[in-house]
Length: 203
Image (cartoon, rainbow, N blue to C red; front, top):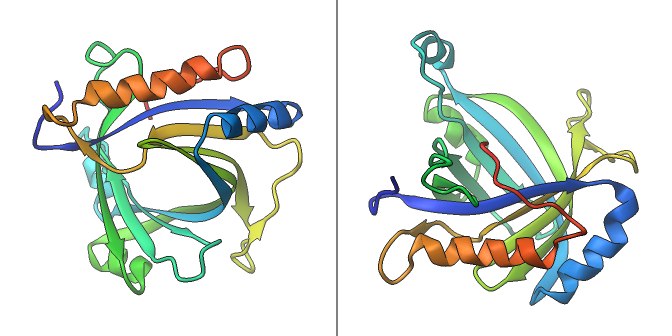
């Protein structure tokens, strides 16, 4: 059951092979208001006591830091998700509590000062689209060179991933009911039907 006290992300997910890139790119572009290239660095952190939490039967909350590398002066964003709402409550889309925080300066040291340790890091390169209150990300993941810590360009056959989601956290209020955002992502699902399968995902 969604709570008015939480802010949420509403999302659908999909993936496709490179051979379908042009057709999918064209269709998303046709139904979007804006598009640009994206190259994002994402670093995942776990609480220092993550092992203890797992031993106690709890899944620790992962703290993520991301930075858009295509914009020179772009700062870091720290964000975290809680467990998605049940499929019974929201069968059509992933709805999960979502908290974000903009950080000026060294966000990675800040995350560690909050009692977290770095777990992993990836880069995402592709395209970003905007449609109303939604952002659509279409990307390939790049692995990190262990020696230089720089991204390794993805192999051409690497799977493309798609995320259709609300661009900012939303509260379930009379003015901004979650149903509006669910309808918005389902519109994109319908527009892409037959070309890209967008679906709910328990992430």
